[in-house]
Image (cartoon, rainbow, N blue to C red; front, side, top):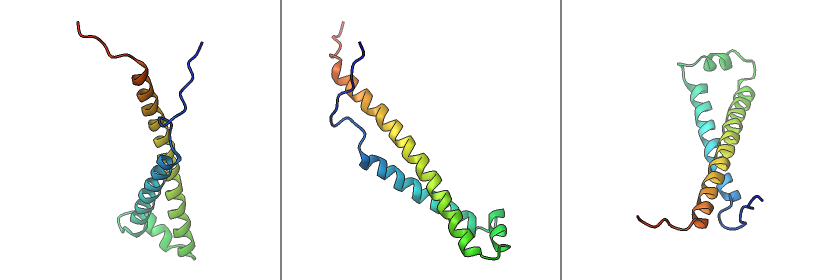
Length: 99
Protein backbone atom coordinates (compact mmCIF):
# COMPACT_ATOMS: atom_id res chain seq x y z
CA UNK A 1 0.00 0.00 0.00
CA UNK A 2 1.36 3.41 -0.93
CA UNK A 3 1.92 6.03 1.72
CA UNK A 4 0.15 9.35 1.25
CA UNK A 5 2.10 12.56 1.41
CA UNK A 6 1.25 14.44 4.56
CA UNK A 7 -0.72 17.64 4.16
CA UNK A 8 0.97 20.35 6.11
CA UNK A 9 3.65 23.01 6.06
CA UNK A 10 5.91 20.84 3.89
CA UNK A 11 3.78 21.44 0.78
CA UNK A 12 4.76 23.85 -1.97
CA UNK A 13 3.18 27.23 -1.31
CA UNK A 14 1.75 29.54 -3.96
CA UNK A 15 3.99 32.27 -2.56
CA UNK A 16 7.09 30.28 -3.56
CA UNK A 17 5.73 29.84 -7.08
CA UNK A 18 4.92 33.56 -7.32
CA UNK A 19 8.46 34.48 -6.23
CA UNK A 20 9.95 32.18 -8.87
CA UNK A 21 7.60 33.63 -11.50
CA UNK A 22 8.59 37.20 -10.57
CA UNK A 23 12.30 36.40 -10.67
CA UNK A 24 11.92 34.74 -14.07
CA UNK A 25 9.89 37.66 -15.42
CA UNK A 26 12.52 40.14 -14.28
CA UNK A 27 15.33 38.06 -15.75
CA UNK A 28 13.46 37.63 -19.05
CA UNK A 29 12.68 41.34 -19.27
CA UNK A 30 16.28 42.35 -18.62
CA UNK A 31 17.63 39.84 -21.13
CA UNK A 32 15.15 40.95 -23.81
CA UNK A 33 15.90 44.62 -23.23
CA UNK A 34 19.61 43.89 -23.47
CA UNK A 35 19.05 42.17 -26.82
CA UNK A 36 16.86 45.00 -28.10
CA UNK A 37 19.14 47.88 -27.13
CA UNK A 38 22.51 46.19 -27.65
CA UNK A 39 24.20 47.10 -30.90
CA UNK A 40 26.02 43.77 -30.82
CA UNK A 41 22.88 41.70 -31.44
CA UNK A 42 21.02 41.18 -34.70
CA UNK A 43 17.72 41.63 -32.85
CA UNK A 44 18.48 45.34 -32.61
CA UNK A 45 18.79 45.57 -36.41
CA UNK A 46 15.54 43.65 -36.97
CA UNK A 47 13.56 46.07 -34.86
CA UNK A 48 15.13 49.15 -36.49
CA UNK A 49 13.92 47.93 -39.89
CA UNK A 50 10.33 47.44 -38.66
CA UNK A 51 7.63 50.04 -39.49
CA UNK A 52 6.20 50.00 -35.94
CA UNK A 53 9.17 49.20 -33.71
CA UNK A 54 7.49 50.12 -30.41
CA UNK A 55 4.78 47.48 -30.71
CA UNK A 56 7.23 44.85 -31.92
CA UNK A 57 9.69 45.59 -29.11
CA UNK A 58 6.92 45.48 -26.53
CA UNK A 59 5.67 42.12 -27.77
CA UNK A 60 9.20 40.71 -27.92
CA UNK A 61 9.98 41.79 -24.35
CA UNK A 62 6.62 40.49 -23.10
CA UNK A 63 7.03 37.09 -24.75
CA UNK A 64 10.59 36.67 -23.45
CA UNK A 65 9.54 37.66 -19.94
CA UNK A 66 6.55 35.31 -19.86
CA UNK A 67 8.46 32.40 -21.37
CA UNK A 68 11.29 32.59 -18.88
CA UNK A 69 8.90 33.28 -15.98
CA UNK A 70 6.85 30.17 -16.76
CA UNK A 71 9.98 28.06 -16.97
CA UNK A 72 11.30 29.45 -13.70
CA UNK A 73 8.01 28.89 -11.88
CA UNK A 74 7.71 25.29 -13.12
CA UNK A 75 11.30 24.58 -12.18
CA UNK A 76 10.78 26.18 -8.77
CA UNK A 77 7.66 24.09 -8.19
CA UNK A 78 9.52 20.88 -9.04
CA UNK A 79 12.49 21.70 -6.82
CA UNK A 80 10.25 22.81 -3.94
CA UNK A 81 8.22 19.59 -4.19
CA UNK A 82 11.39 17.49 -4.13
CA UNK A 83 12.68 19.43 -1.14
CA UNK A 84 9.35 19.06 0.71
CA UNK A 85 9.32 15.33 0.01
CA UNK A 86 12.84 14.92 1.35
CA UNK A 87 11.96 16.91 4.48
CA UNK A 88 8.87 14.78 5.09
CA UNK A 89 10.87 11.60 4.53
CA UNK A 90 13.55 12.64 7.00
CA UNK A 91 10.86 13.29 9.64
CA UNK A 92 9.45 9.79 9.19
CA UNK A 93 12.76 7.95 9.52
CA UNK A 94 14.13 7.39 13.00
CA UNK A 95 17.73 8.52 13.51
CA UNK A 96 20.37 5.86 12.93
CA UNK A 97 22.16 4.46 15.96
CA UNK A 98 25.96 4.65 15.84
CA UNK A 99 27.67 1.28 15.69
